[in-house]
Length: 226
Image (tube, rainbow, N blue to C red; front, side):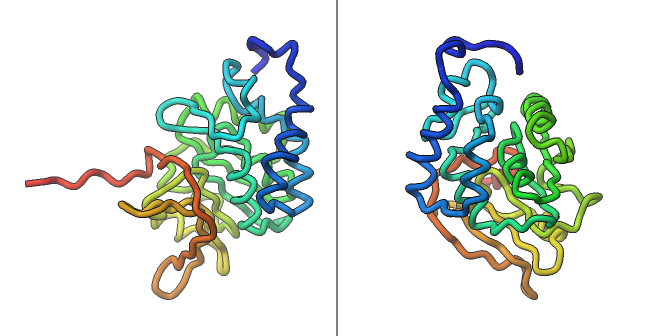
């Protein structure tokens, strides 16, 4: 986390962060002042390996290896906004990666559990949250299993695209809880969606189209062909 990267000495990260908010966040109708304020101060450059710090505020998702990315700022901000975060509620971030969205939710007053299965990513995320959102609780484990010991959750946010929401996560929702994620059906269009438990299962509705890669760990196993 403290290693220097080429360009660190000359790049003004605070100025880059303000430009990100003004040029990428506000123009896409992220108008919750709490989210805007938090994104103005959270040091996104601390959520990537040193080699990527100089492009931490680019308007793109950044590849972190093994099919994982740091979600593009405008997508992260919009997903948090449609989640309608409420201070004091319990939230689970699945695929928490390097901790940006977990820290953002914590800055909004939620009680956050961050679940990650990749040790290298969670090491960055734990260090980042220790500095910026120390109340975030980290769990290492399989993403599809959720964090049953910390449930129920008012909000579950999956940071990445899935074909379908794992059933274990639905089971960990509190009454009237919601799941926010990108659902990318086979052969269809990926959309950031909100899901709520219903008598017939999880009822989801798309909110906006989005380009975000599938979380490799949550991709369905390929069907056998005969």
